[in-house]
Amino acid sequence: QVQLVESGGGLVQAGGSLRLSCAASGRTFSTYNMAWFRQAPGKEREFVAAITRSGGTTYYADSVKGRFTISRDNAKNTVYLQMNSLTLEDTSIYYCTANRAVIPSSAANQYDYWGQGTQVTVSS
Image (cartoon, rainbow, N blue to C red; front, side, top):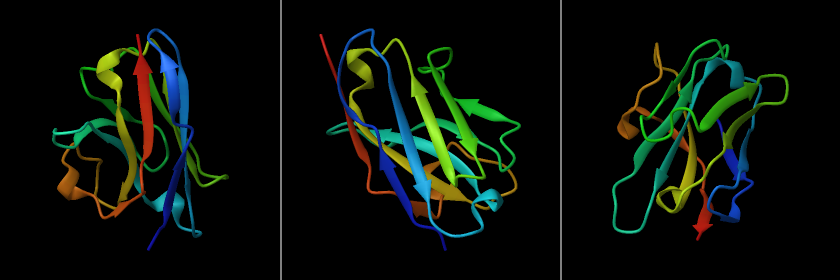
């Protein structure tokens, strides 16, 4: 089992940047694929980005491709989401999640462990 704690959210102006972090407990972090999802009020939770166990392969939603970068540091049990060129549409609660599937998935129901979320608000 792994426990996940997100941090780094906040209020930022459109066009700005934020870096989210997700710290994982335990000594098996490197055995998990990691991903970020987000959920805005009244909307379904949507896939943002994912990264494989070694960090060698990354996946992105079309809406964030070229603006967001997911990375991980297995020595620090931490996954990151660097968000640049933020827009009002990026305002959401961002969740970190983990699974041990063969490859990461863009489906929320394929993930086993979730953090509590961190709020990102982009203002005009």
